[in-house]
Length: 424
Image 1: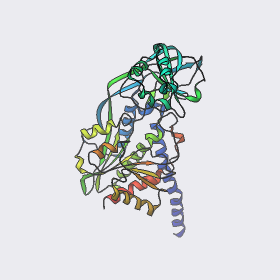
Image 2: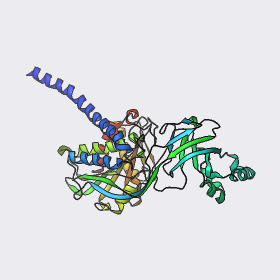
Image 3: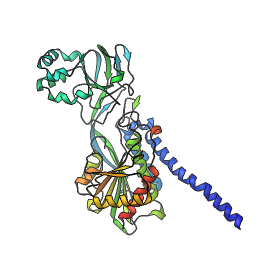
Image 4: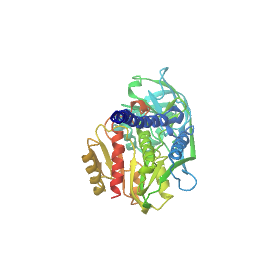
């Protein structure tokens, strides 16, 4: 009997670590799937957002989340500018690599041609004669090159000069560090490329380029929403949210994986769905899980939800928004921490007792993720994001393999403990 018991305990010793590893393996698989080329950057090209939404819906169904009504989807439309073909750029006859050396600006017009290069130097902003000489040129057949550092200074130019710049054949912005882009909801008149300064040949005088864009004024996308009904207070809700969309791609050869931003937060949302759907983990309050679209386009998914809530906002006891959760070496930041000091202190106390994270910092109000529209409507909300680790952000380098997930299990436990404490 004793030998049998020892053997059983030995089996548990072998199985339990593997069970924990399997959880992180599932997390890694989720992030790998969401960042795969098949998802096209979870943006608004080749239906990447819809493919990601279908995947999240399938995961909600798999664990048995309930839907509000007969669908997990909440559809809405947005205007979006899309780079539908891989942009091309040759400088002095040398081809630069799209996604590595340059990208098209999200707010770019289409364009193609061979252009002479002129440089908008800093002296133009401070010397009237230099400005007069520069703007005496015909810019329609020119590629105007300027540094990212001088981009904001364009607004200091006279209106007539700004209008002339809008007539240029192409704008090229030299970036000192990584290439960044976003989602644009309008299309300007002028084509714009963002080029790494280190990839730009000094004194280049001639370029050849091609950009093909499509502006869709009513692109159809969707939030994905499910819930677990509470055991004792089903009409009161804790809400967990994360945006699943990212920047999409530029043609078929360039895409932005968005591992940290925000496959990591989406993976956490799905892990919470997995946890609360288990019978032994049924919560006292109802738990709503919302995967928002169009966060990258200006929080449009969360703003749409607030215009069309699926249950009264007054029933939300607290919302926790999950974004950029792939690191944690330096702890975690809580946006709105100073706005809700009681709940922040509760979170701090849990972390100090359990030693999940090296530190939890707080800041005030910020319109930097999907918690913000809820806060503006009076819903108490936190936005969690982890600190340290990878610096890849809004560029092709935010891929799954470089994401450390340093404190992902600890953040998961902290969220569960915090949710449980909010019930008290």
